[in-house]
Every structure is written in C-alpha cells, then in structure tokens.
Amino acid sequence: MDKNLLGSLYDPEDFKKRGHELIDLLTNHIQDTISGTNPKTIRWNEPDQELSFWEDFLKNGKEQDFFGEILNRTTHIHHPKYLGHQVAPTLPITALTGMLSSLLNNGMAVYEMGMSSNAIERIVTEKLCKKIGYNQHSDGFLTSGGTLANLTALLSARKAKIEHDVWNDGSIEPLGIMVCEEAHYCVDRAAKIMGLGEKGIIKVPSNENFAMDADKMETCYQKAKSEGINVFAIVGSAPSTATGAHDNLENIKEFAQKNNLWFHVDGAHGGAAIFSKKYRGLLKGIEEADSVVIDGHKMLLMPTITTALLFKEKNHSRHTFSLKADYLMDAPEEDEWFNSGKRTFECTKNMMAMHWYIILKIYGEKVFDDFITRQYDLAKDFAKMISDKPNFELATLPMTNILCFRYIDANLSLEELNSLNQTIRRELLEDGEFYVVQTKLNGKHYLRTTLMNPFTSIEDLQLLLEKIKNNAQKLLAKKTS
Ligand SMILES: Cc1ncc(COP(=O)(O)O)c(C=O)c1O
Image (cartoon, rainbow, N blue to C red; front, top):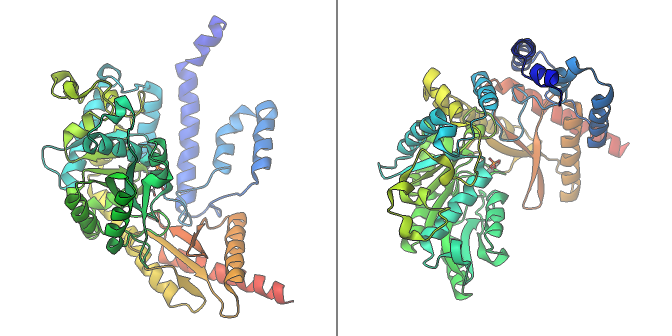
C-alpha cells in the first residue's frame, strides 16, 4: 500500500469533517423519526432489489450518499410507530460510546487492552447483582448477546452440577435441561451446541397464558429421569419472546432446589424490570437464581450488543471455561476479574460496559424505571383498547410490553383468518407507516407488537387498529366481489 494512502486514511481533518456530517445527519434523523415527521418506519424493499442496489452502489454510487442511503434503507426504531422486534431505540449518548469503542478498539480480553472498560464492567455488574437481590458472593460480566449468555450460563450449570468433568473429558452419559416450550429458540440452540440433543431438551408444556405450566414440571422431570437422562438445569423465561409471558420463577426456584438443579433465568427481555418499582414483582424468585441474563440492547435503551450474565456465586462465573481441572479453582490467578477474557466465551469483545455506565452516570437508574414502567403500562392500555373492539382478539393479557392480537370475523374459518392476518401484516410491511411483526400460537396467526419506543402514544396505537380494520375490510370486500 502506498505511504500517502496510508497517511490519508488516518487524516484527523478528514475524520472530523466526515464525523460532523454524520452527526448532523443523525441529529436530523433523530428529530424526524421521534417527531414522526418522517412518515415511514420502514421503506420495504425485496431482498434481491436491495442486494442489487448495494452492488450497483459499490461501482456507481456517490461516496457522500452512503450515510444517507443507509438511513433510508434501515428500519427506524426511534419512530413512535415502530412496534416490532425487541430492539431498543438507543439513547443517543450511547451512539457516542459506541463510536468511542469502535475507534479505541480495546478488545478487553486482557486488562491491558481495556483498563477502564474492565473496571467499569465490574462496577456495572456489581450494581446489577445488587438490583437482582444477590449478596456479596455474586458477580458477573458482560458478553455479546442473550444467545451467547444463555449458552455460557448452561455451560456453567453443567460444570457446577455434573460430577464428571465434561469440559475436559467429554460427556459419558445423556444430560438434559428443562425449559418451557415457549422459551426463546436460543435455549434449544445452546443445548444442541452442548451436545444434549433433542432428548436432552425437556420441554415443559405451557399453560393457557403461554407461561410454563408449573404443575407439569414434576412429570416431565420424572419421565426424563426414567429414560436415563441426567437433568442438571431448569430455565425460567422472564419473559418468553412470542407473548411476553413470565414463567413463575418462585415455582421454578422451589422445584430446582428440591431436585438440586441449576436455576437459570433468561431475562434477556424482562430482566430489566429489576429497575421498575411497579413491575419488579414479575421477577419474584430471581434473587435465588444461580444465573441471570439481562440484555442492555432490549429494554435498557442501549445499542446492540451488550448483555449482562450474573451469577449468585462468583466462583461459577470464573470457572466455566477453565482449561485445566478444578485444582486451579483456589489459585489466586483465577480470581482475576480484570482479565475479562478468562470468563467470557469471546476473546475480543467491544467496550460495551461504557453504554451502561454513561447512562447511570448522566441520567441515573431512574431512566430505566421510567422507561420500563411506561412501556408495560402502555401495553395494558393497548390491551384494553383491543378488548373493547369487536373485530379484534388478544392472544393473552400482556404481562410486559409484548402484545399479540389478531383481526377476527365470525364468518371466517381458522384458515381464512390466518391468511387474512398474514396478508394484513404483509401490507403493513409494504406500506411502511407502522412496523409490526407476527407469530403463530396454537395454530392461530397473530400480529405481534413490542412497545419499545418511549414516544409511542395510545393515539398511535388507535391509528394502527383503524388502519388494520380498514385494510381487513378492503381485503374482505375484494374477496367477495
Ligand atoms: C427471551 C429471549 N432470550 C434470548 C434472546 C436472544 O438474545 P440476543 O438477541 O441478545 O442474542 C431473545 C431475543 O429476542 C429473547 O427474547
């Protein structure tokens, strides 16, 4: 590479100029999306068209249009009519910590490559442990996503509960975990990565509210045992993804304690409610969990990807990935909290602790309480509005800010209703004013909303229902004409 080119890549003036342009663009983006001036949450494009656009742009596009095109071609999570997946409308301040992490690029695996971020991570995770209700024996770390955190927790569970050293010697018997059939698919994936196989994922059926049916735990456990499976952990969803239903953590805790199982809470979405005075009760029992996952990039207003994995017993957080046998356990070098890579799946990770820290420093934890409480309250108001309308049906009453409903018409069969709701969702996507997603529950097709945006009002939700009703009536009229 020629020397002049290399020098110009790092030209501070060039960085400043482009940086200012981007900040101006993002400032307008925030203003236009939050105020709803921008009429669309998504400008839908078919995947092949999108691919062609970017292939062509690489050859013919103008460099100065790149940032703007990205904005045009992404889903606007800051828009009040964004009601889709569980991704946070990031606080703008955390876009700046994101930039800081990208430029400094301290990978954190060893203390020297991230002194401040390793120290900050410890402060943040200690605070989270306290909020959960853990004592001074607890600790945790941040890792790259709920999926990876759930896998890590289950690896810790196996290390703690299975006598045989599976990590070093491999498995010598069928092992298993218990989880509600409604849990996020990443728990299945973690179990499969761990070699538990389909038989080792003991699915506890859900009740009519789509939460784990606690009465079925014992039968499922005994059946697995009778088939020779050594069950070592049970996972509670707080909440599950599709409907936002919280498993009863107290029941699961008692069951786990009685049977000497590791009790893990997947609180990727709703673990954040430890900050909500009003909704903390949904998590009763979490303080007895052996491990807890909480995503910052879901209900805590941070960018992807930053997840806390917290342990009731700090030893468990430190020995999951030990390469040697347990004789190292008490060796002082194992207690190196500041060398983050010893405890995480990743070697290099981004300086994600800064997002948590800057929010706490500037705004304090009240911002989390206000946000979570508002969004959960809004879902309850939305549910009431839906229940009051004859052409709509809720899947179940919302426990969080996730709410599933469908358009109904007494003259239509289940298949016709499913097809109608699927078409409604497709039309909403192509229209782009609102962004909602979909799910299937007990064979019924539902529209699924997650109220992630602090600017979504009950009036916006009213407009959504009107739009759906109009679309449905047009579709039905077309069918009969
Ligand atoms: C309950 C639950 N667990 C885990 C995950 C996966 O988390 P991540 O997307 O951070 O990997 C999700 C994602 O939606 C979730 O809802």
